[in-house]
Length: 123
Image (cartoon, rainbow, N blue to C red; front, side, top):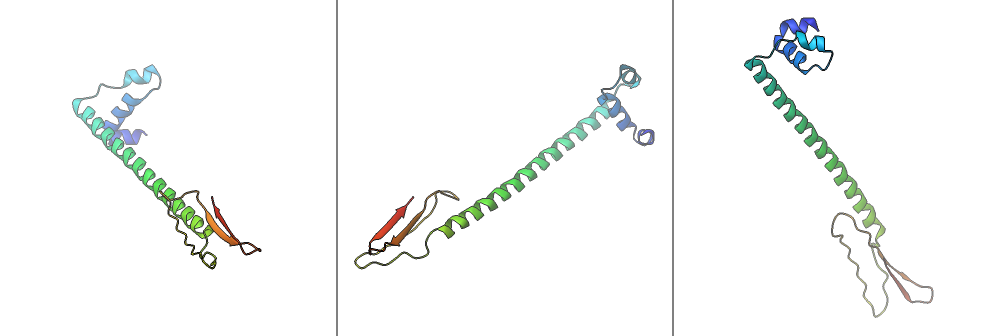
C-alpha cells in the first residue's frame, strides 16, 4: 500500500480522511487541500453514477426475466384452452380468450356428454 501512496498522494490523503481506524492514525493525516477535496468530490460523483448505472442494469435484467416468465405462463395458459369446440346440431360454439394483462386465471371448455348433451365449462 505504501507504493500506491507514493505514486498517488491524493489517494493517500483520501484514505486518511476516510479512515475510521485509531485516533493516532487520524492525527497523522494532513488536512486536505481544495484540489484534493475537488478530486474526492469528482471521484464520489463518478462512483455514484456507477452505482446508479449498475442498479439500473440490474433492474433491466430483472424486468426482462419477469417479462419472459410471463410470456411462458401465457403460452402455457393458451395451451390449456381447447383448439376446437364440439359441434352440435342447431348450435354454433365459438370461444375466444384474451387476458387483460399477460396472464389471467380464466378457462373454458366444452364436452359432449354420453347422452348427447353439451357440457360447457367456464371457470
